[in-house]
Image 1 (cartoon, helix red, strand yellow):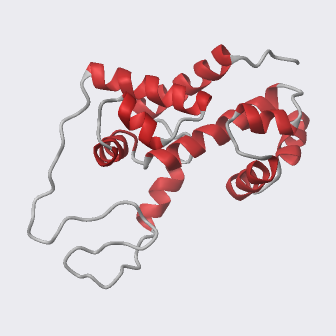
Image 2: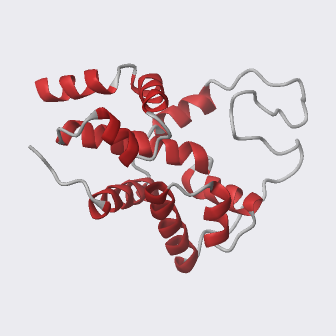
Length: 180
């Protein structure tokens, strides 16, 4: 049952998640994203723009055509992928990721959101949680090690975030996975 958790294992897991997102599979909470779009009925009172509360998507002004952006080039997609993988593994900030992709911070966030349907911070958090769930299910690593491997600042933050996302603690998740 003991798997070796090294940089290669983590990198492979993250690249698999990126590939699933690019194919349009339901992973990392994409169903949650769709739910946010469906549940965003409360808006902030701005009728012309309808900036929905709690949703990262904003509609264009009424009467204005949405501006479709060009898809990422192969080189840009490769930069994004490398930046994301290294960012998760090495704990880089969003600003550092933007620099590594040769974008300003705002352009990076916009392009990232267009590509993956979530803001970069949210996507990376979901990716870290998914990686943690894989490690918990496949290894006997202590919870504190899993927290550190997945780039969480401390165990308390990891456990609280994991519980908020999955509805159970990491220990309960591991027990449930082993019983199935």
